[in-house]
Length: 186
Length: 263
Image 1 (cartoon, rainbow over the protein chains, first blue to last red):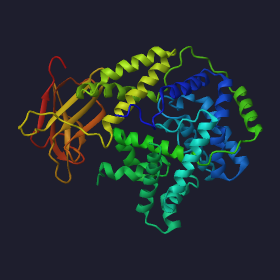
Image 2 (tube, rainbow over the protein chains, first blue to last red; image 1 turned 180 degrees about the vertical axis):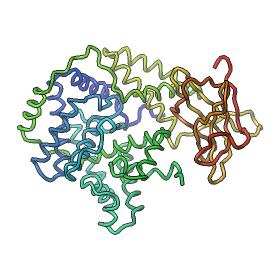
Image 3 (cartoon, rainbow over the protein chains, first blue to last red; image 1 turned 90 degrees about the vertical axis):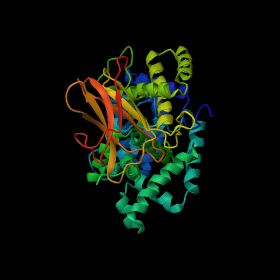
């Protein structure tokens, strides 16, 4: 029996992130500065990819970190990685901005399980390469469906229209594409 | 027509993307209230989306972005520093689930006491009491994942040469107003039908307590189910009802268990 699943985060990783979030919760700006240094490239990278505009991406970066400062309890540090949570929140906020709509996802409702541990620069670089490699290995249609949905914010109907594929095929491609990504890191 | 558990799978990914709308969204949200498995899968899918987001990691944002953020933080109202940080509200549900998971694990005897000892060792190493609690929840959550994993194998031990009989176990806590229910060796239900669990109170008519369908091996589980407040349960029973559930039992009781004085 494998004692600890490879994908699950170790207790010390969780404790490390918990401490950082606890310091933010108690209003320590230095903790926010450390957290920004650790994760701003993830937030900015996602925002820039979605919005294709540096000024707009900076606004989203500001918005995401400020929301975490105002409401650190929205992130449940005992269960998921902050990197994954920030990436998802940033994507949602960027798509909202792209569509010029009010935020549709409450950050408190965005509960995440697992996700990569990216405490230091080496781990971050390795994980990013692994994710990019996994996407490159994916069937091109599947990767396209995932990227159109996540980075361009197209609905499954819009993707079906764009690719000429049936709606059901697109829905299944998105789900199985995400599960394939998960399997690569299990 | 009510959809089956499997039919929600694709919609979960769209929901995680925030792209599910209308009646599909409403139906899935209702299903999520009663299905711990789908709630867990939704969280996993969000983790997968987070991984996908990592593919666009970098570049370094301009230095002015951090200065702007730190200025904005300095201008925010000062937060009163709490002596002992509380667990996030969001953890509360998992606190229930984790507590119930521990109960279930005890029932199925998969070594919860052994893991509890390990948890205790970890607790001793940590300085912050609240951090300890969160990590313990993390561990129990992992155990809950095992219990509700789609590929989890349930093995029932029975007397040799005896036919396998349907059986069910309800575990509830009046103070926590929550219950879980597990059943095994249930025959499949006909199309358009489902099993319904009933609470038979000390006084009054049976009360519906959830509908479920067994998997292909005849196993079924309802996790984190609410118990009606103020009801003293005398017994639990299951009957076969229409798939959307009934207000009162309409078929003979298939399984029944009385609440004994010891619980």
